[in-house]
Length: 326
Image 1 (cartoon, rainbow, N blue to C red):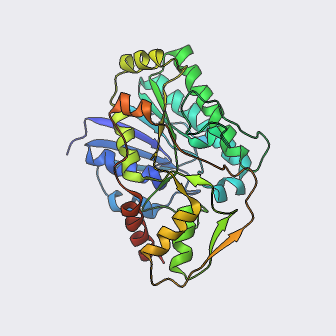
Image 2: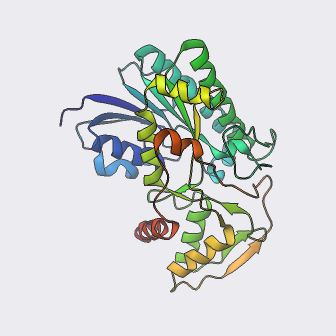
């Protein structure tokens, strides 16, 4: 198949970046994936690495210049799991900032559209529930999670200013907890932790009393939101967000179904009845949000999108993936 459009995906060998790259190839794109392989892996892209429309560049967006022509830029460059971003906090902040500057520079040179991947972490430990896009958040600027939270907040500022100052055709998604195959088995996120612990018959560690909540979105649902959002014309985006009285085109992408961490642990054990694991409680880490649930009203209105893969089904697919990696 001869590709008619070219997409540049930063973080293209990561969990979400590899799923996005596969979807873009299926949609007939040429895909250029850039990844430093700090958290991404060549294994994630192995299934399509030989595709004539796929090019992989091992490089770090913090110190890399790209001179090719592209139609779309998807910016996913940044460690996203607490284990990895807390191990290299300075690098995490700089990747957030330089990754978005890299994307803006490419877009300004080529006229490409940008989809920037932000995060629900910009809301911090929210005082508003559920979280909607007008909420400014409750974030600690000097905590152990701040490198990620604040890096992503600055990145949003840079995108908003690039739109205002340079008329860049950009849009942003605030991604809530997302899971699925190709997650790193030791990435420190709650679903991968619980599944690997259950598969290994280890204690399932629930921090605090397990009453803190999260909203879990399967990766395929999120990638569908990416593709729908990128297809919306710039004029429609500007009109929509002017009416919504938001200063920039940012939407929540997540599953509004809300589960306690304890409920998640119980569901993992329900799906792995042979596991000898038991649930144990541990002290709550610093700055861990108590509640997390997206308001996706804007995504429904603009994209006609909402997640449709239930947790039980997505979890079953994720467990099967981790079985093969055990």
